[in-house]
Length: 400
Image 1 (tube, rainbow, N blue to C red):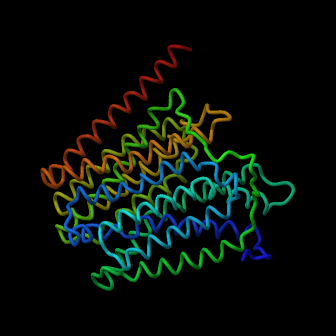
Image 2 (image 1 turned 45 degrees about the horizontal axis):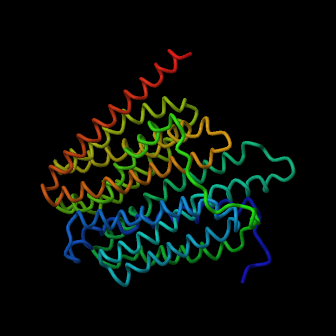
């Protein structure tokens, strides 16, 4: 039953933001136990990487095929659907703690994130406009969208960190209390979202299919965010087992919180920078952070892992994300939404695909060599993209 009374739009913004944080947090809630699930199921790191990539197999088709869903059916139903998917994926591993269930849960999590991608930011922006009445600030929608982006980034790291803290405090368990606690929070959030006012009634004239637009001149920003997010994918897919061998598996949650949370905070501090400067600073910082993580794992130095995670996060979810998205959509005009969709496809392909060969390499040649290979790949790729960015600017100056 849909409630007939609704909350004030100002309150609704925070409830929507909370829902998005919880959905994002549920995506990485189980990461500290990935290595344990793989071992109990008789698989190696390569299989863990494949299971992790199932998330991308659901998310990208949904972004393409249902990008305009919230324009068609309204903002509330997609957010409720995302919370339901996150709830199911969280409880699934309580009852079946195996790697096969991780793969299925990752599919549900991919659906959840894809449902929030368009609806969440739009709903928060529209609620902020409604809160101000007849003469709203034209920049308020952008501020609400920025709030959602930052809180979602924090959410991606918070889930893994919550489980890691639970394991540190309460000891090892295949059924950590963080799973049930999150399931309760997701259910409460679902109930609260029912009372948030709908701001967009939709209609059949809105197209559900929204094809991404890969515009000329945007390949550098797209490949840069793909490279940056590949570092996050490697952390999620490989770091749990790598740290488990040194008795530091619980720290993977802290590393993910620093990568995602550090990036969210960096967005605040660099939001007034030129997009091309943000991109280049990110490409310089990324290999530094990535190689610090690798050196920390290889040398059993957790402080290097933590510092590397923070630097990588500032690059990946901070300057590369913000600068790259602005560059990708700067000249898109009426195709801005489609250009943004193309940028996110680059990002999520980077998040999921490189983790698979690196995970397989981990099983074939060992953890140390696999991490060193990826460190070299990340460093060389960053330098090449940085040089390509400078060459593009020189060509633009010469042409003018």
